[in-house]
Amino acid sequence: MKTDIHPDYHYVVFNDLASGEKFITRSTVTSEKTIEWEDGNTYPVVDVEISSASHPFYTGKQRIMDSAGRVEKFKNRYAKFGKKA
Image 1: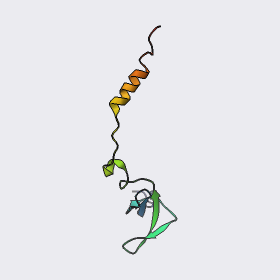
Image 2: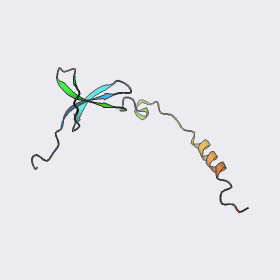
Image 3: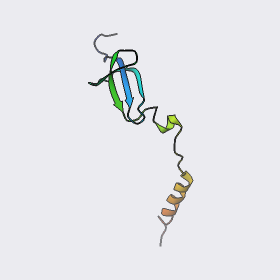
Image 4: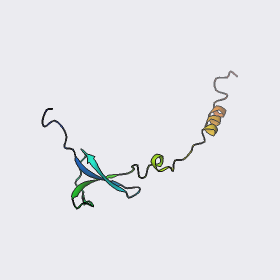
């Protein structure tokens, strides 16, 4: 592999603003903010608005849409469209 062409890949703490959950992983993203993690080391912190800790799909709190009602509304709205008077 060529040297000096890959971005710096290091440990980063992601802070979910919606749930307050923090998790550490490796990433190329950087940040000026830092935090001392549970292992005693200091890592950069990146704030995210939503993650698997707060996303409805992963938490099981997903809303079910009434698709049948939406289809009926669409049909009623455009029922007269295209008919000759």
